[in-house]
Image 1 (cartoon, rainbow, N blue to C red):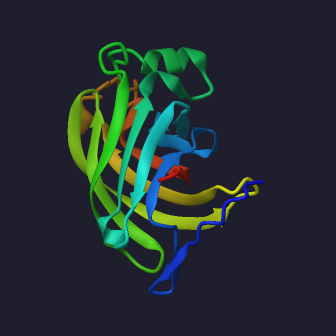
Image 2 (tube, rainbow, N blue to C red):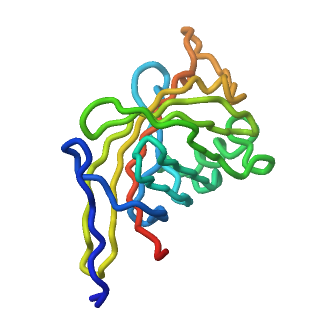
Length: 194
């Protein structure tokens, strides 16, 4: 247990917010994944284990920011053959573009405890603006004296917009892998010493 005085969260417009400061993403307690329709009959889910980044919580919550880097080679769809294919130039081309990044550019309120976080998403070296529907999941002081915050976020992208244009078609018509991809994030971050 830490002997330091606990860091206090704060209440803004009836919402408990984390203390002002810089938070490091806790990769062991963060999920960064996606869902995409497969052969028009089911969905494939995947995740990336190599996630790092920072969240800066500002005094004015709308001035807060986030920056995330994902190691694209850490993809896991629970099928090694498929994972290896997704790492190729057909999809992520990790040999040429080893990281996926997101850097926020704006935060706007979207209800009590929810925000629209807009930023630049870069996949395969292509950068496009996206907006994440983001919810504050909680603020807590852990048993070790760390101030933690949890967020969830989702957005949907068209993979063609990022040059991920694998276009295999089924015999009966329709794409083997759909173009629309839902991105899902469950992030936990720890306040860093100032």
